[in-house]
Amino acid sequence: LYYYKNTTPPERIQYTDHCSDEDTNPNPDMPSAQIVVTFREDDGVTMLESRTTYAKQEDLQKILEMGVVEGVTETWDKLDALLADLQA
Image 1 (cartoon, rainbow, N blue to C red):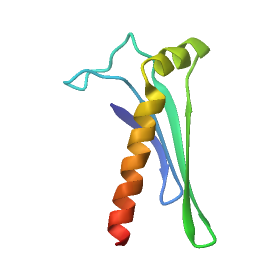
Image 2 (cartoon, rainbow, N blue to C red):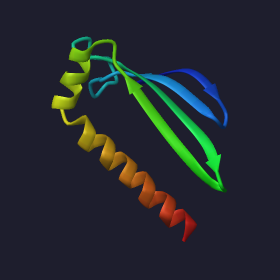
Image 3 (cartoon, helix red, strand yellow):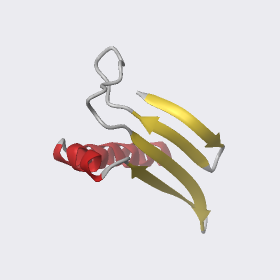
Image 4 (cartoon, rainbow, N blue to C red):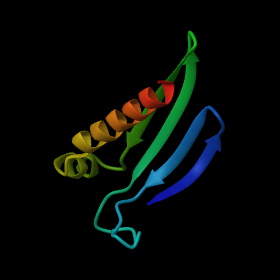
């Protein structure tokens, strides 16, 4: 479940990411993340940077133990494949 806070098209998206159940109800036992995505052009190529922060180190550790690195990697790989298909 995402709560968008601040967007500056086309350069920046800022939002809060909450773990939620199948009905999109936030899970109060899970930490939320503050995420900022920025886009910039570098020699004709769009560069994307995504930064995620948690309120406490323990929150980050909990999410890491759940496999967030693998999940995020899969998401970015799917985006990469989609963009490659769109360029073909």
